[in-house]
Length: 167
Image: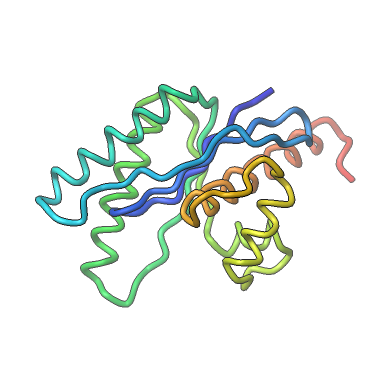
């Protein structure tokens, strides 16, 4: 059994979701959102994000982490702030000693729905289908669970290829 933490970085809301894998079987553990004040000094907001992530890491003790890559925004300042938040996310999981895997949003959408251009609603429906215990989670947490599921599928496929049992 392996516990995977999926993360969807954001400066105001960072979604997180934890799944467990047993071979190809997935099960929902928990999901939520680390909320950071929308105002205040950037350094203090990043510190609040870090503290929230540490709480999640300590509470759920994942073995691996999967992080969604940043989508470049039209506004350079917004992209830069999101990059700061993503850096804190990567630092927190790396400092906890976890292997960190990164996935582009299009890759996550394709892994769950079969198309990289899927809508958020389609991804959310697939998350609920694959993890029946997570019926009512926030959209940011749903996105994080999608990243965790993507990594779980990627991990299982790599295991099967290594074992010579890929379909």
